[in-house]
Amino acid sequence: MEQDDFLIMKIQSVRKITLGPHVNLFEISYQDTKGQHRSWRIASRRDEPKCANGRFDLPDAVVIVPYHIDTKKLVIIREFRVPLGHYQYGFPAGLVDPGETIEETTARELYEETGLSINRIMRISPPIYSSSGLTDESISLVYVECQGKPSRHANASSEEIHTLLVSPRNAAELCGQKDLKFDAKTWLVLSEYARTGNIF
Image 1 (cartoon, rainbow, N blue to C red):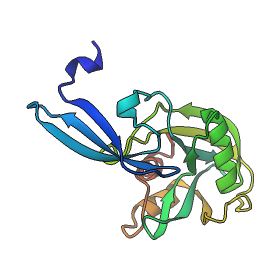
Image 2: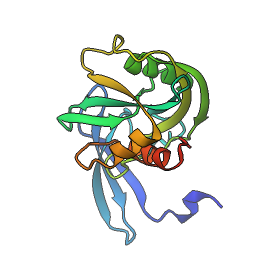
Image 3: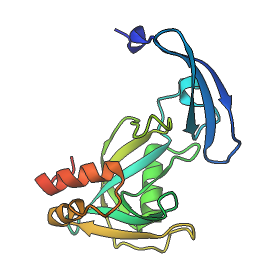
C-alpha cells in the first residue's frame, strides 16, 4: 500500500518569501481535512521546498556520531551557536555540498570540526527530520569509527568548537545537567550510551 493513499491534506501552492544564500522562507498553501484553504510558513535549504519538488531522497546535511577507537570514547563537540547565543553540546555536522556523497561530507566535516579522521563508516541512516513543524531540512546520522588527536586548526573563523571525548560515565554526568544546551539527537545518543555503553 502506498503512503500517499492516506493523504487527505494536499499542498496547493508554494511562494518563496526570501532570497538568502543558505536558507529561505516559503509560504505553503494547503487544503486541510475539511477542504479549507490554509497556509504555513517554513524554512528550507533548497530553492524549492521538498513538499513541492518531491526530492526527499538526499539529506541536506550529515550529523556524525564518532567513536574514537584509540580511547574507546564517544566524540562530541561543544560549539557556540548563534541562535542560542551560547554553547550547545552536539555532534560534528555539516551541509552536503553539491556533488558530494554522504561519505565525502562526513570525512570533510569531521576533519574540519575536530581534526579527526575516519577509520570506518559503520552505519548511515536514511534522511530523517528533527523539526518538521518549522523546516523540511533532513539529515543522515552517520556512525563512524575515527582516530587521531583532536584539533581546532581546521575550524573556520565563524566556528568556536571544542572537541570532547566522553566515556559512558561522562555522558551520564552531562545528560544529568539541566542547565546545558543539547542538540536533540545528541542527547538521545548520549543517554543511551550512558545506559548501555553502546552508540547504537
